[in-house]
Every structure is written in structure tokens, then in C-alpha cells.
Length: 345
Ligand SMILES: [Zn+2]
Image 1: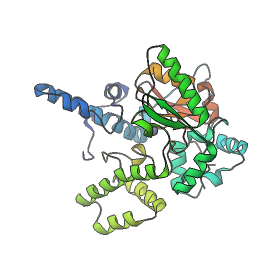
Image 2 (image 1 turned 180 degrees about the vertical axis):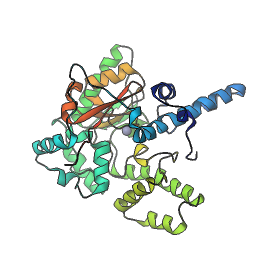
Image 3 (image 1 turned 90 degrees about the vertical axis):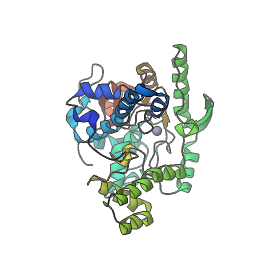
Image 4 (image 1 turned 60 degrees about the vertical axis):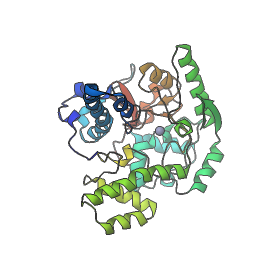
């Protein structure tokens, strides 16, 4: 699919259309509606194709629109607390101090890539002290990831036939949430098997390349990049490669799977995933509001805007998230808790 004007959103002036699009959101924004198309026959095919187009474009376009059109976002205050959320960059140093570290160690302010990662995926850095946070925003090797994962410790459980691994506190909370869901006839199961939870460095690198390499081919074919640029990008040290990709995206040369949005809304940059921190779990049943409610009650929240099945274990009560520097962004009834970036440290 080429990046183009997004039909589902060109008519969207507000939430009504966005809601229409996203209420049918496919579990994975990037594998959207394939089953639907397969099942379609004859006239139904055209209808299914139309719906699928909305499926495909909905969440992706949503992410893009969120990035560009803040007016499409609804900020929700939680419960009776009407105080605005605290500044992420004010809370973060205090949270890190309790863990005897400083922001400069985790994400040097001069490193713009690390800073962008922190602001996209950084909710875990203000998580409850019961969990271990990564020592860096961006891991740079398998050895470094293995060392962290061994120190943080993790446990394995078989959930719906898949062996999934998470930090002990995260797993305990997940199992409790699942038990509660099952009592109500619901379930919480891993999406895409073991990959739903802990991942290694190599996994994150391979996933990056599933977006990065095809995008290079595409932009080369479109004449937006030349052979020399493509070869240079491929041969760059990873950190530089990520920086260049993010820079190219500023001019519309996007690297997500459908080439319509930033790669960061499609896949985490290598070494940066919350799955590496073993604090993330991709949930099949994310569309069910009651499932999301149960997960939230047990400290699991959606914290990466536009990654709908992805839940993060923060181990905090929902009412305490604003004072921990996270703001809620509600899109089509789904609440994302993201760093409230209002100033630089
Ligand atoms: Zn995930």
C-alpha cells in the first residue's frame, strides 16, 4: 500500500468518523482484515474490501492524525481528580532517584534518538518500584539485554498454549487479571504466541528490518532515495541508522509497514521495546472494554499510542497515573497513558 491521502480520514473532522473507523480496528493494525478479505465472495468481496480499507487505514491513520492533529485527541481527567497531570520531566528525575540513577545515564539529553524513544515508550520509567526498569532507553547488544533480563528476573507461564515470560510482578498481576476475566466468561490471551511478552535484542532487530528493508526498496523504486543513499543507510551503525530513518520521516519518507506513518508506531526501534523490559504483553482481547478495565485494575495500561493490543505493566493505580507524569489520551473510548511532555529536563 502506498502512502496516500487516507480516504477514511479525509472526511474525518472529528471523533465521529474516527470512531466509525476504529471501532472495527483489526487486532493488529498491520495485518488488517486479511481474514475478512479471504472470507469474502462475490458482491460481499467489494463490501469487505471497503471495510478492510477502513480497517487498514483506521489505526494507522489514527496514529498519524494523532501526531499531526492534536485537536483530534480528547484529554480525559480521571475520577474526581481534576488536577492536570504532572510534567513527565519533573516526575522522572524523582522516580529515577529512588532507583539510584539519573536521566543522563538512561537517556542522555544530547541523544535525540534516545529522547524520542523516551517520550514515545517512556511510561515504564515511572512504573512502580516493584518492577525493574531498563538501565538505558536503547539497548545496543544481546549481551546487554541478557544481563538486564537475568538481573530483573522473569517467570514463565503457559497461557492459552503459549509460553510467555514477564517480570514476576507483571506476571502475577496478569494472572490475577486473567482469573478475574475468566470469572466473567472473558479471557486475556497472548497475541502471536510467546512474542506477546518477553523479547530479546535479536527479535527487536529482526522486527525492525521487516519494516526498514522493504521501505528502502519502495522509496528507491519511487526515486525518493537513490542507490547510494540506500547502501549507506544499510551499512550504518544501528544508532545512526535509526536517527537517519527518523530524519527521513520528517519529509514523508515513512518506514512503517504501510509506509504511511513513523516506523515507531509500527515497530519499536531495535533495543528499545517494552517487551525487552519484560513489562509488555500483547493482548488478543484488547477491543473488549471490560478486559481493558480489568487489566487497568491490575496495573496494566495501554501506554504506546496507536499500538492497540500492547499493554504495559506499570503496577500503579489508574488514579495515580497523572501525578506520575502520565496523561491520558482517549481515542474512541480507548485510554492511552503517555508521558506528559511539557518541558525539557
Ligand atoms: Zn507489544
